[in-house]
Length: 337
Ligand SMILES: Nc1ncnc2c1ncn2[C@@H]1O[C@H](COP(=O)(O)OP(=O)(O)OP(=O)(O)O)[C@@H](O)[C@H]1O
Image 1 (spheres, rainbow, N blue to C red):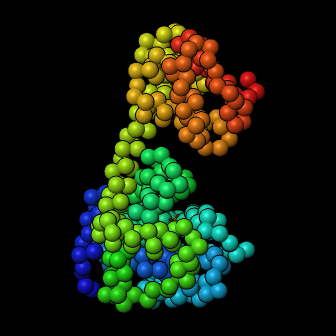
Image 2: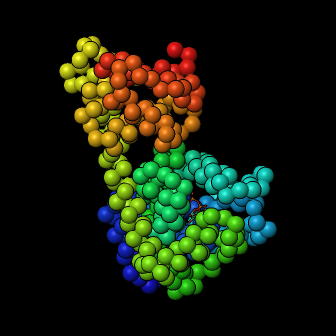
Image 3: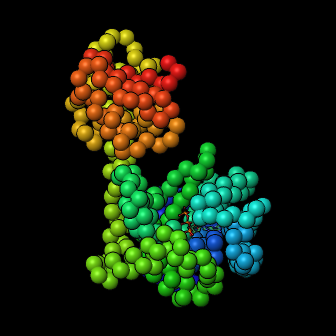
């Protein structure tokens, strides 16, 4: 077997980021495209060093005419490598990108649960990360949306989704597949410019590369990487602040234990904190009480109460909750209280 720089890089990434341990069971999600073929080939080549137990999962969305042929193609590859193959086929053809995605993650989780895999591994790359970051930025997301694809995330109890290729660009996976003659299954829907994702990939990023910075993809991916750690840090700090604000400060100025009263926040505690944390605390609270994710306006409205005059109150939030100031406290009353 030829050992390339990419093999060395992935081996190092897995080790230093502690993505996998030795002898684990890894379920690799293979669509047949260049990224997931590159992923499975790399993991197969590293397998003797790590002692993993590899399996391949494929999801047939029945979206394209050639989807069954695509599934057969991946199955043949699994057979030629002598590793278990698991197929999930949609009962009804899925008809949008978003439904396809959510069905796919459910299907992969089901396979992992049935066959005792703790890890599902996908071929998301730095290029996907850059695209996701741009996509979320354009839609108007806060810093959390700019983390854009993390190295791992829980999919269900005891099942983690892992993305070891996040530092590798799509041109690298393409070159790798060419070097090893891996039979890529081209997805015709990737060409369809009806989808915003494809326009970002095929029009916006090439334009940015050509006219602004040839390294734009890796740079955006790195930005997502930095933001991920920063968001994690801020979320934790906000959680601590929120707990303190619910207690009424270090000395518990109202006396007694107020931890059990989730809908009351002490303004003096919040006033000492930075606006960034004040907003995050309010967002965390709203996430728990609103029927849908809070937007910028909802968060600003609640944050304004931190310094508003006594007896100020908000108009009702979706679902009917109202927040009001009473001396040092902001009370948030749900509809039926
Ligand atoms: N039909 C499929 N069967 C198995 N795995 C798949 C399939 N489609 C995609 N994957 C896995 O997901 C990875 C990302 O694929 P793709 O970029 O097409 O996904 P996406 O639609 O952008 O969704 P998301 O980024 O939310 O996963 C692939 O590298 C592969 O590991």
